[in-house]
Amino acid sequence: MTRPVNLILLGPPGAGKGTQARMLEERFGLVQLSTGDLLRGAVAAATPAGLAAKAVMEAGELVSDEIVLAVLKERLAQPDVGKGVILDGFPRTEAQAEALDALMDETGGKIDCVISLEVEDDAMVARVSGRYTCAGCGEGYHDEFKQPATAGVCDQCQSTEFSRRADDNAETVRTRLEAYHTQTAPLISYYRGRGTLVGVPAMADIDQIAKDLGKVVSGLMRG
Ligand code: AMP
Image (cartoon, rainbow, N blue to C red; front, side, top):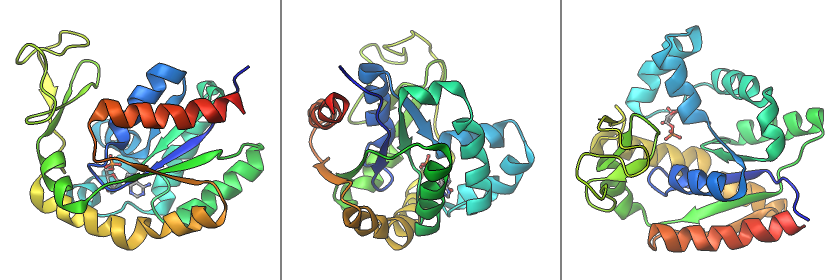
């Protein structure tokens, strides 16, 4: 018997939250819920939230809790979240963590586990600066660490279109790392205090980290 679980992935930009969330989604049927992706969608669609968030995101700073919570709540209202979610990039501040607690109380849901991906900052600038995504299916690649088997063709969907995020440049990554350390890293002790924190070393290769995370998630699903 398995049950749906709700997870939070914590870690600085470049820790591999998005990559690992996609792998967990595929393996366990959980739903990846990235506030960064939701906000980029809002920017692309030029919604009022997107228009307000665009410049803040390009500068590598945090978007206001009000906007982030609004896009998150809208997404959480969709029925597929009943399969269990992997929150990727949320919460990022203590106020957001408290808002999430309140939301869980309201909906009768619960965060089963908070996984902190443990990495070294020095490696993050190179990891983030070289990354790009398939425009067709969203598969992630990296100039140095993960190239498609055939150059210029996505392994998953054979698309030849790729995109790079506007905020994935060395200067903005440094601002994002600083935002992580000042505003988000305190959440590690917040969740440790609640007994839901698990630390997973995340400097190894992608498949090894996926195996380690898989063990944590299968354990949770078995209850
Ligand atoms: P990410 O895709 O998680 O790296 O997020 C990209 C950018 O979106 C961040 O640098 C922030 O500007 C914004 N963002 C994403 N999630 C949040 C959040 N939970 N709170 C505030 N800003 C966020």
